[in-house]
Amino acid sequence: MKFYLITDNIDTLMGMRLVGIEGVVVHDRKKVLAEIEKTLHDETIGILLITTKLVNLCPQIISELKLKRSRPLIVEIPDRHGKKEIGASIDEYVSEAIGVKL
Image (cartoon, rainbow, N blue to C red; front, side, top):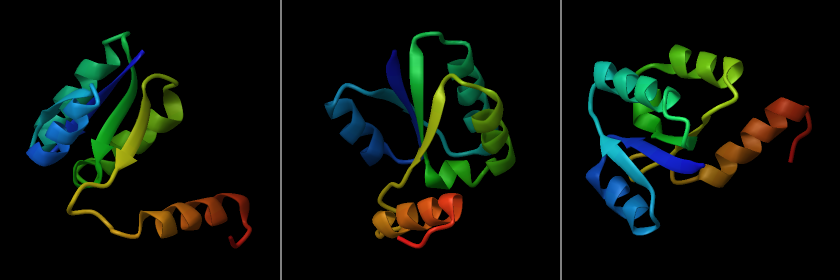
């Protein structure tokens, strides 16, 4: 199983390529959905990384895929335009999920 990245930023793609993760740069909703559809049919892709800005273009569809499909695992990642306090966001998600303040 391999990783695949869908991003709106060439810098993010170049950084991921340095560690062996291939991907594509897109900027509109139609292309994001087309790339997601392509990854759903590729049995070799186990983890799909999508930048926050692109997730915000089609949040309902991505949420539905996360809930209904076991593969690929869809992971939202921040890029240079995202929040700098990602640790605080993770704490907030965990606190919400388990009902305990961390």
